[in-house]
Length: 464
Ligand code: G6P
Image 1 (tube, helix red, strand yellow):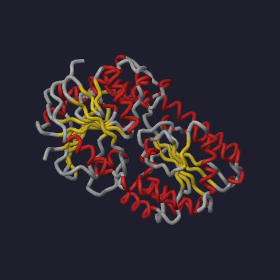
Image 2 (tube, protein in one colour):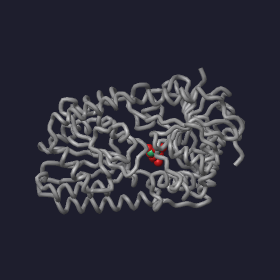
Image 3 (cartoon, rainbow, N blue to C red):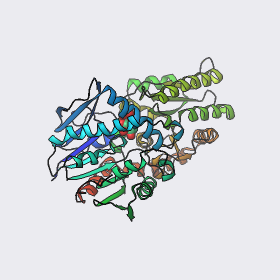
Image 4 (tube, rainbow, N blue to C red):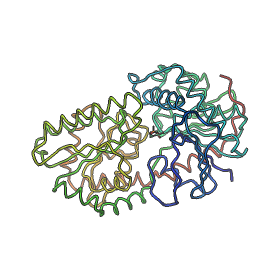
């Protein structure tokens, strides 16, 4: 069997098999990777210059090869093009997009440097699976260095229609790079359709069914929603609920219901709207004063990007405002933390929560929604309030779906959740649970790798 090579900007730290690890992609893939897999990407460290050679560590049979980023590359590639141009653009936030030509050049240069560092480690029949928006030109960069094996790409975040992508100055170059892969995967059918429309419009390619026909071959586009290892998360949640940490929280709630939100502190997550929604709940439904507390965990993220700094200041202000307006001397409605909380603890928090509030303005999938469902006790489950602009909403249709731009809708959904009968909670949860246990992390990996294995190499790169 061909060796699987995973390439992602973030590479999880090597770990012993079975140990709990960081989150999202790492968890989904780590249960899938087998002995012999090579995982390549950024080390997370910034040094003076991007070195030519990766550092290699083995763990649990997997070889991890990571490379530092030079300060200027970090600035242009990571802070610049990836997180100040592509991230806002692909989350429909044109107003937040900043573009500088030198950032795009830095983005291409880092992709080239990564490919250069990986090439000596590759075997001709390796199957390469590239992850996320940082690495769109990676296939081009490998092909330019002579690699002819199969290369697939999965986008973890949303994709946009042509009218939105049009705002990005290098839209054409980017689409042609995406079409240099053998397989391109998306979280939902909506993103897949937008990709096909953009391939036609900006790549100038013909589209036949769900394949893009390029000068070099055919690109197969698939929708392959990412999932979680639900049985394992459910076990961790049940165990965690009995720990001291969760006991302390329960005691501090003194019988009040807990609403919980947990994510990175990111403007795509709709945090100000959610805070406003919670304030509306308290203003419009005073019967919930003293009966509910919202625990918002917003782990600090991408702190070198100015928009994230501005968001943090805004949230500090909003949190202070809500608590100033509604607190009573023995009740604080909003508990707001910007620290990272370990996954095992989060699982326990989800389990005892009455409401899971997941209201991003846009999200590729959102695994917190799935984890919240998996963590519930089926006999007395909490209610998921979910944005209809999260990819997960296409599968989790029994959640209370809201438009996160409307704080009143969030408030009304929270009110409904707090007043929902046990029977309705159980019914909704049973349906959600089926969905979460069916579309698993393993299935996600198998679907992608099977699609990739079924493809022949794309041959020479299309001329740009
Ligand atoms: C999102 C992206 C990932 C990214 C993660 C954390 O989930 O899809 O590619 O790794 O956010 O962001 P960071 O910038 O810290 O890697």
